[in-house]
Amino acid sequence: GGRGGRHRSKLGRRKNKIFFFKQKTAYEIYQCDWSSDVCSSDLAEEYRTIKRPLLMNIAGKGAAKVDNINVIMVTSALQGEGKTFSSINLALSIAMELDKTVLFIDADISNSSGGRLLGVGGDQPGLIDILENEGTGIGDVMLNTNLPNLRIIPAGHVHDNANELLASESMHR
Image 1 (tube, rainbow, N blue to C red):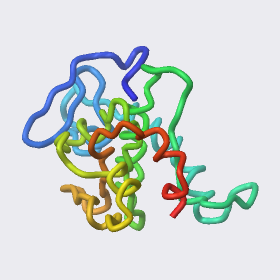
Image 2: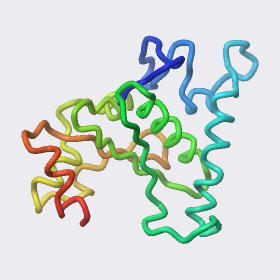
Image 3: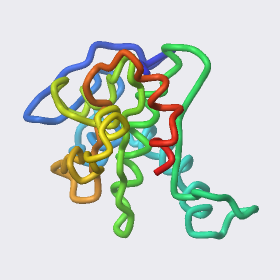
Image 4: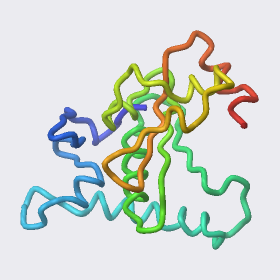
């Protein structure tokens, strides 16, 4: 995870909201005072454009039938290419839909910046804890947010075999 390219800037927090200086999250743009010249709907519109075909696929109106169609994974080969920035903004944009609920899972076990940027403390149990302990379920680690359609599963506690846990059969249950 991380934020790359032209999106690099300092992060800040105000009143339990996440905001990016110079580059706002989709949530802040949706909540923006439109009379302000600081606010721009360009980023929100870009994520609306990205989410539309994804939502059509989820609804079964895509070009091909796909297993686990309601899962969207954001990945890349290199650190700093904007995975966290894109996944948070896409999750927030989809969560703004009236009939969609988003479960944001921070699977970046080496960095876990997604959960941190969404206000989750580093001591919260999460995905790794589910995979390590058969008795721990999704409901035990899932966190509600101030957005009614957005839930978070943080990365969880640091574990020596975290990569192996992500590749294990437990990940498929």
